[in-house]
Image (cartoon, rainbow, N blue to C red; front, side, top):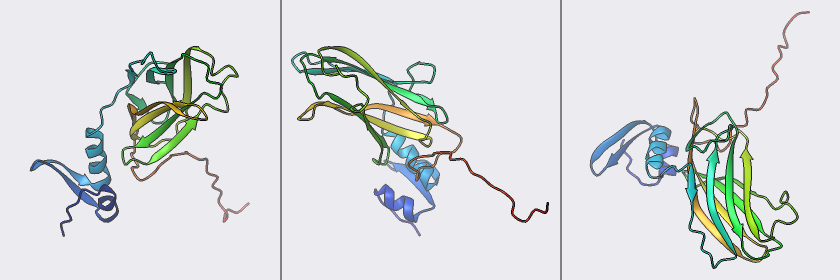
Length: 197
């Protein structure tokens, strides 16, 4: 039976194999999860570091965002089994006492896998005018695959900066699990119960 659809979630649920056609040309055939991931990855540009127009008239300006390897280098492709950091450079041009910065990470199916803000760990003077660099380190819990990072800067009362899809990254690993949101690598304890003393 052949099933044709643009609904990728339905394809992933009911089809074990898929074919990707682009304007009548066969691009890829294989297990559905791999074909869907390749299709979605092709649609997203990966950028390891990005600068933004600072918009001088606004109270806050996002200057740059970068994904950093564990040794501090900007990169678009990172290792799945190593922590990595995301660094944000921004200017605060007027006092904003409740200033907050948040990043959300989406997989290419649009599922939000992470949403973190600095509100609880920010320095007391976080809303004072000046130039800042904030860095967040993500543990090695995401499965291999491509991700999009969005950045929000605001206060308790308003959104001051919103950059959806501010950065695209790819985590390389041995196994891609497109239906898994996180890969915690939890420890297992296994003991034999029929062993004789």
